[in-house]
Length: 286
Image (cartoon, rainbow, N blue to C red; front, side, top):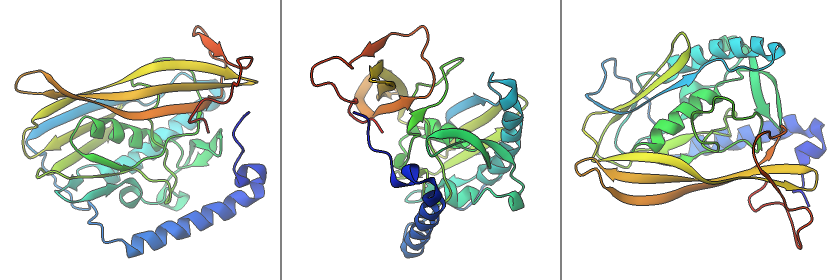
């Protein structure tokens, strides 16, 4: 059996009400919070490179969707300018929503592709999740601590040209679906991001050298059919490597993922559990 839909999915008219309620709840939490938020910037780059990553700006989708991708680049330029050069000092927490703010038309944002309420659709500010994805990937290659992260409840597109493992993406909805991470070290970190000609370019730097490097990878990738639905699942793991010796010193499971697939998987095996005794939606399915 499939998981029961949320109330806002059964009754779409209630979705705006749910959004307003969630935003009010988050505003109250921010007012009550004593968290030291990352706010300061430094124009010069810190001395030590921790991780770099470039993310392709425009994917090969249908022609009807290309204008949304071009608009996405506009949105990413605006959001990246808010994040670039931010420092995350010892004890501070970075909040994507606090730093970027509400992506409205008044702020210059335009309609891009958004993944919302189980569907891919046009929406103002669409595409900024790509920036959150980039930040999350760099943070996973550092000793910084992820505090809050949400992923999309479905897998919208096939893996054409995929560089990162499936399941490390990040969902953002102002202000109540956030990506936050905390600096529990004695080192100050700095985020550098820019929109280039073809790529969203990111770099994480620090004021001291790192003792460890990190390798993040997926295991146990599967597509599973249950009834009329296909789910995708995997595990995200991280190996911690001593920079001095090159030896692995730890391996940790970061996340188990399972999401509804919104496309027809091709050239990959799909395990049909529909007729298996006691079969059900895979654990972790939305």
